[in-house]
Image (cartoon, rainbow, N blue to C red):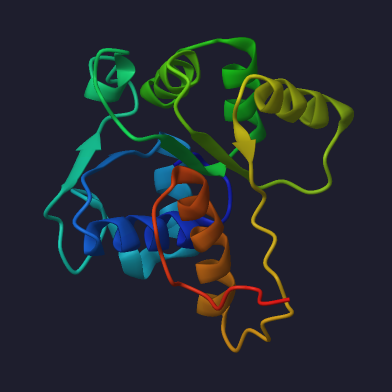
Amino acid sequence: MTGASGVIHAQRLVEVLLEQGREVHLVASAAALRVIREEAPEIADSQTVFKLKTTEGLRVFPEKDLGAPFCSGSFRFQGMVIVPATMGTIGAVAAGVTTNAIHRGADVTLKERRPLVVVPRETPLSAIHLENLLRLSRSGAVILPACPAYYQRPASIGDLVDFTVSRILDHLGIPNSLHARWGG
């Protein structure tokens, strides 16, 4: 998690993965922790980042911990999601700059040819933003803006969030039924 708006997507993604019995390694930047306190103080928890129903399977790592398991190519993991993703993080990853565990984890994910899903949260986008996103896409990342579908007639913000989280899970190859699939 980085310091962009949209922490609700990260929270829901973590909840769904843990409900499925998956192990989740989480890094929240200092800016992300600030956004959590601003956007969703009801879910903020200084010890676990989120107040979740269960924390079994959740491992939280400090932002500067370059020794975290996913910072090594020899550690086996299914993929990585940066949600929400700031343009600063996107720029650092696109340039191959690894000053924290989020950048290094993304770098390892790309070099090992594992799925990297980036959920940018910025509008409007400058030419620099677009070039960095294109560079990541050409490097193998999936650029997945939090753009919900309205053809499903969402009844709540949760429905909108579930659509985006479902698309993230799809790109990680993780089965889910968070929303009704398009039937044509």
